[in-house]
Image (tube, rainbow, N blue to C red; front, top):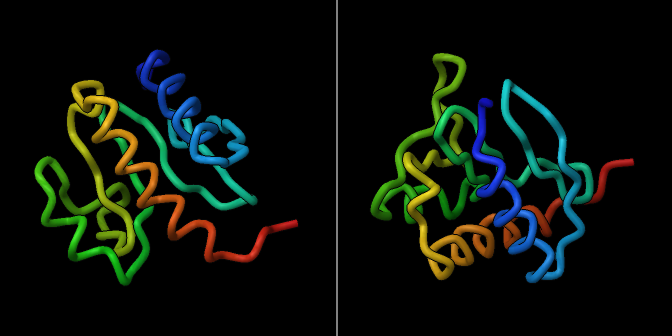
Length: 111
């Protein structure tokens, strides 16, 4: 499997605890979580991708375990990649989800 199903369940539970209504969607060989039609985070091949937005990009890129998201050969500003996300404790996972939701909630819902 291209993603950890237990971690996917933890992500979804945390999104719901923070008031989101996530939709799971299989994408890019992994799983993505969409809120209001916008992708906020995802899991693929032992990595977690988190949408943090352009204004919070540098700050979040400087956090331990975070690096540039580069899936297509091009850096995706506004997203960070975390290696070994299954090792995140509940507080760290909650912080990353909170950061993602803070940005995604600024976007208008897609039809």
